[in-house]
Image (tube, rainbow, N blue to C red; front, side, top):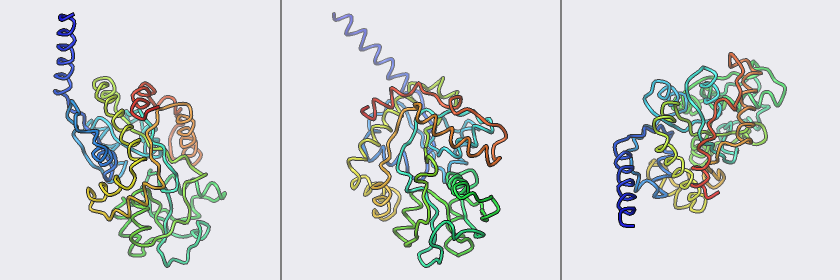
Length: 313
């Protein structure tokens, strides 16, 4: 019995030693995953090193993945689709489900624009290939409009904010926390949201090399991330306060965002694959991807058990 205990202890020690020698390079956007994981306290005993790298949007994050600069990161379904269609070696290992009310086209408080219909012929800022771009296309399609019926101005979030504030564009198609920031701090109004017209999925993605060489670290990471998101749903006010301090933004902004978002990490299942296929099909119809791809081919379902364990499923 003693020998078995000693052997088990040595085996665990060997595992911990192997973990301690590895670094998981994680891409994040605007205090997203790191903020909630720190607030939930799930990073205190990580047996490997997490090297965080923050990006302003998904496009540069995916470029970093393609260049091998990071192993995993959080992106929306729209930029993920573009990346997959461009043959960037990346796969979705977990899904992010949330209310679609925070993916929206906003207009200034005093704008005469009351609905998306009023934007015909007007300028809308968004990121090329972003989920904001996806929302515009879905909104156009839902009305039977053509791409030429609005003027899409492709800008990074920081530049879109400047153009929007200065009145160089009429509206901004963006995502959280930018939507809540505009609503709470500047009284902007949402004239359309993704609710009912586009899936609005997010994905934790990883490179094939990381999936192969750092599987244990990735499984542990998505388990902790899922646990953190589950915690945040029951601690919205506390998380919002922590997030506000970390980002140096008034807590009313994250409270507005997180109260309605109800963010959770979900395993890659049939419903996720079906929703991702809707995004692929949308981009295919608009001629934005060179060849149609199958959603099932760009996801990895093998992390489902880890996600489920973290989420308490």
